[in-house]
Structures are given as C-alpha cells and as structure tokens.
Image (cartoon, rainbow, N blue to C red; front, side):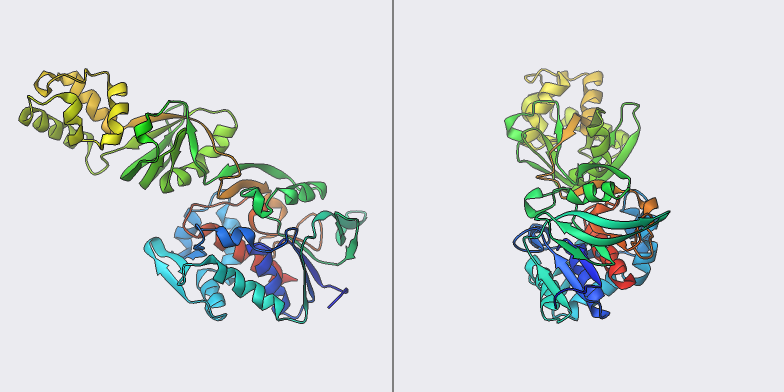
Length: 418
C-alpha cells in the first residue's frame, strides 16, 4: 500500500520489527524503513547466532539486571513481558526452549527463526510496506508555540514521506556493520532530546599488565570477578566463567562486569579487576589448606607445587606477582610468603584501563534520557507523534536475554499506542 501511512518505523531491528507488527495487527498502515539491504542483521547474529530472546525470571529479578532506571519498564513489562513474548513467537510457529539461567532460545538454535517470524508476519500483510536501502536523514516537525509534532521523514536522497507517527528504532552503536551506527542519537538530539554519551557495554576489557602468552585464550570457571574503584569500593561482583585475551579479560562474567566498568573507564578512571580463584573457601579456610599442603609436600619445589592450587596457565603470572623464588622448597616458605600466596589466590588483581570498541560490544550503554519519554507509550514528551524504542533509550542490561526483552517490550508499547 503506498502513501497515507499511519506510522513510519525507522529501523528494522528487534524493536522496530516488533513495533511494526504490533501496529499492523491493530490495523495501522505501516511503512518500515531499513537503511541496510536486509532488515534484522543484528538480530540474526545475536547470542552467537542462537538468539537468547528473553529470560523467564520473575519481574523483580529481571529488573535487577537492568541498568539506569529499570522502573521505566514496569508499564511496558506489565503488558508485554517474557510470557507474552514467548506466546508471540510460538503462535507464529517458533518452538522455544528454556535453558540454564532461565534463558529462552529458539529450539532450532537459529536466530534466523526469530527474524523470519517477524518479517514473514509483516510481508504477508496488505497494510505494511517495507523499503530497504532507505536511510533517514532527519525527521521534520511542525511547531506552533509550545506545541510540536512530527510531520514527515526526510531520506538521505531528499525524499519526503509525510506521516503523523514515527517510531525511531535505529539501534545503538554496537556492531556498526549491521547498521547500528548511532544515527538515531543524532536525529533525537536534533529534535531536542538529551542523549547520554554512548559507550560500549557487554564488551571485553583491557588491562595495563602484559599477560603471559600462556594465559591468552585460557578460561577460568567457577571464579568470582569484582570490579574495584580507586577508593577500594566494590562496584560489581559476578560469579562464573571468564577468559583472558592478549590485552585483558573477556568471557561471560567479564562482559557482565563491563556494564558497570565501561563508563568510568571511558571517562579516564582506572579500575581493578579482582579475581577470587578460590571462592568456595574463606581466607581462613584457604590458609589452613595451604599450611597442610606445605607441611605434606615440604620437599617439593615451589614452581612445581603451584599446580596444587593453580592451573598451569596462571603459574607464570603467579611467579611474577608473588616474588617468591621459584626453586624454593615448600618447607622453606615462611609465614609471610604463605599469606601472600593465599591473598593472591583470593584476590588476583589486574589493572583495567579501557574496553574494546563498538565493533565487539554486544550492546550500547547510554542513549535518550528516559525522563523525556512516556514509559507507557514510548512517545517523546518533547515531540508529539515521535516514539523512541529499543537501544536508543538509556537502558541496558546484563547478558541473559534481558536486552532483547527491552527491545521487544518497548517496540510493542509504541506499536500498541499508535
């Protein structure tokens, strides 16, 4: 259907596709504009191609995994939360499974199934038009006194498309090759919105220490990672699996920790990554174990005996950090050296000095100020007829399906409100 659109959705990612489907279901004439040659590029690679689309944890727990002001989402989640999202896809023929940590995936293990459920829904409708390779330059508005509302989108080629409702769903800045280049932040700023500076999040972090080659690519399981600021305060703490890169740390708990660490690091702060290699033991219990091990293995060389407490990959760093002669026999280790070893095992530290960039970040942290958006409808409080959804909002969450739920719920709220 050409022209006379009720709503234009700018961006064919998770939030934009959901907004378009929801509006179309309610009989609205929808135009979906996608700047790339295909919609849903980022959606199709999310979760390493498996698409962790939501998490079945209760509302309170879910909100605890969301940064900024998670209360903003209560209205949207009250109408379209994890169960409604699962029903949405199962009703469109996608079989879903709930895995460890309440994470929900398509049973096929293919994110393509999620994308196809959305795009096929749109393509079969007579009241939906999809245009690809259509980048939006700006949004035109009409203003009289304090009253301001959208009137049209202006494409990069100069084409003007009139419409009374526009959903801005262009995504953040992570994985820019999928089309998420941050254009929506500029458009929102031009319309008077305040945008908190975007920074990479759920991303590997850099450390200033030169890590031994043995550590690169090595993964630690069942450890605790804490982020410590310059005043010694613990900013975050995560238990699970992490790994080492050539220039720092990565893996599930490191990515989760980056959500707290990224902005301070980008503002020039220096933080510590403190790794508890023996989280099942208290410091006192570990010290008793070390005393027993030293007594029972007195003739062993320290360098060789470290394998009792550490994986081989960490031994070069331990020797460098502990300043204990590697050829010392264990019966020569004094009390101060033993306590130093115990402290290192409970609090191995690396100095964090930055993060990897948006090319590797799973999500963007920052975005449009939530005070400037109606949480019930996602409509701008500054410009009538403008709806802002998904990663453009100053909302971000831990890994585990929480970020896609934000995208789908905010997209649904906007589509339902128009």
